[in-house]
Amino acid sequence: MTDNSKILTANKIHKTYRMGAARVKVLKGVDLTVKTGEFVAIVGSSGSGKSTLLHILGALDKPDSGTVKYLDMELTAARNGQLNRYRNKTVGFVFQFYHLLEELNVLENVYIPTMVSKSVFGWFGVRSEAKKRARRLLEQLGLSDRLKHKPYQLSGGERQRVAIARALMNKPDLLLADEPTGNLDSKTGNSILKIFDELHSQGQTIVMVTHDDNIAARAQRIVALQDGVIKGKNKCAPLK
Ligand SMILES: Nc1ncnc2c1ncn2[C@@H]1O[C@H](COP(=O)(O)OP(=O)(O)OP(=O)(O)O)[C@@H](O)[C@H]1O
Ligand SMILES: [Mg+2]
Image 1 (cartoon, rainbow, N blue to C red):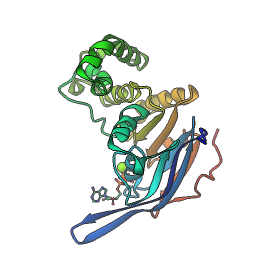
Image 2: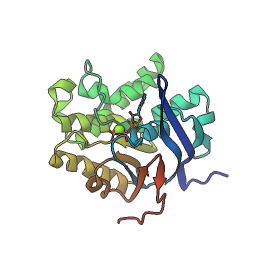
Image 3: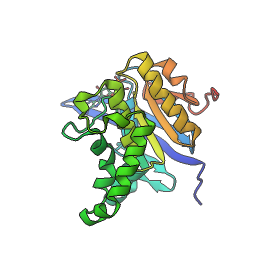
């Protein structure tokens, strides 16, 4: 039976990078459970493996061993088609460096996840709805007057808001964010965190990685990645 209260369960995740003869053991048995609707922050120093872990949770990378389950689906055992759907529909990813497509304008960057999930004919059928949704998301994020801008014509905070709109485009069950405020001044960073607060209060499940304790304090629960494992796993008291 599916336990819907647990949206994501990582069990004994190991990951080692090999660089020539050298081996760097990054994750050494990470256990993490995320409940539906939770806002969890993963903290840890630079190089502790936060991005590695988030990529594994988002199926952008594979662990050497261990399992990740999204509801009943084990990512580590899933077929390519299932994984592509998971990456495109279930998860919304926000990256530290935005990763917007420079040749596309703001509106196009936001609706591209819907476009790539459809066949050419499928896209014709949903195109106008998708554009409407993209416009609405951009409006909610205060970017209505930037729809035709290219990413290089935007500030860092504006780019990150575009990236958030893109991540939300396919109504993801799970928002994964890697240092979403890492390149922003504290005022702009705060406005991004406010957006996360609002999404969380609307029921969005969020896992956010940060090396900054003040930013982590905005989450509902904090777990620390240290020496390749989660310390005090899942035991931190909710902050609010
Ligand atoms: N593709 C790779 N090949 C080899 N080593 C890697 C690779 N990716 C990451 N590493 C190493 O794994 C370790 C963890 O990297 P990761 O990016 O997960 O850390 P992080 O906690 O996100 O750090 P930061 O806070 O600086 O972003 C680092 O020591 C890094 O050098
Ligand atoms: Mg990182």
